[in-house]
Amino acid sequence: MKGVGYRMKKTLLLLYIAFLILFLSGCGIFTLNGWITPADDDFIACIEELDTPQEIGNYMQENFTYQYHSIYAPDPYQLWLTKNGDCNDMSTFSTWVANYHGYTTYQIEIFYKGTWIRHWVGVYDEDISGYSITNNQYYSFGFDNFKEIVNYSSYLVGKVWTKFFVYDYWNDIIKTGYNISRKI
Image 1 (cartoon, rainbow, N blue to C red):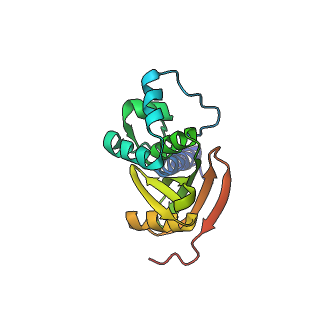
Image 2: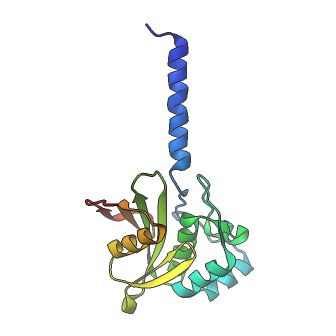
Image 3: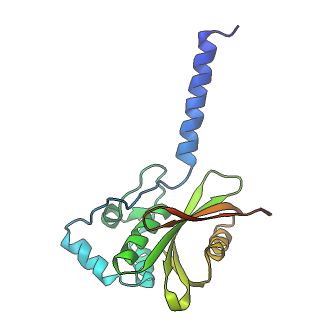
């Protein structure tokens, strides 16, 4: 029969593993549901100038520094103030700004083989040229569908994707994809 000490150690080990999974699971998640634009004239003036996805990407590339946030996910205003964020932070900022200017926006969450880390990409429907993206701070365009975006983003990081979720602006999942081949 195992004693209290054994059960305590087992419980602590399980809690530690759960914490590690949460901590290492990748970029934190911020949802735009219920978020209110702050009454900061400088912020609004900046956002007003960023009226295309390409301008948003250029702004992020010139002004933001990548900084991994395992649990913390700043809202678009906090990211603008601190200038430091990870893929989800930049994806949320960029899709919010593009939506502010009337673009249909999405976010794609990509899961990779052999890791708990996930990646987020901001997606914009630019009608004539198809979909464009901001992958962290970097703007790219000319994509025909979400899977093409996932393949491109995975190629950039050198990882094999296993599945992806596409979220609309309100964080509702509108598409799921699975990589059945998962070849290295």
